[in-house]
Image (tube, rainbow, N blue to C red; front, side, top):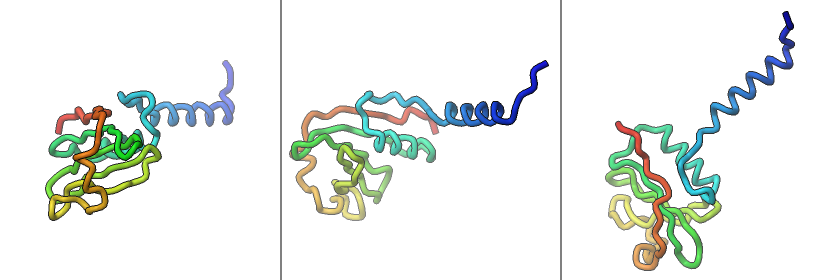
Length: 121
């Protein structure tokens, strides 16, 4: 009978942890890592009402990612390709966002659904 050395056991444990933490997301292959991490963060929370979605648009000549508000007086979020927050186009107490990108809804183009949370509550 072969003896399992501690180093082999350590590699087996690390490999199992890495494989189990690499959840495959059903998103386009060119979706930035930061947006994938946003999805993983949303999935670690309770299901939003309405369920979370992430949309891709072109805005001011760049690809951007829009996450609608999760509820009520929360802000929506608009991110660039590097997952830097650009602004909050809508939501908040007034419903008009933070006032930084007031033209977003009028000038955005090329809408594409990137992800929809399909979990049940």
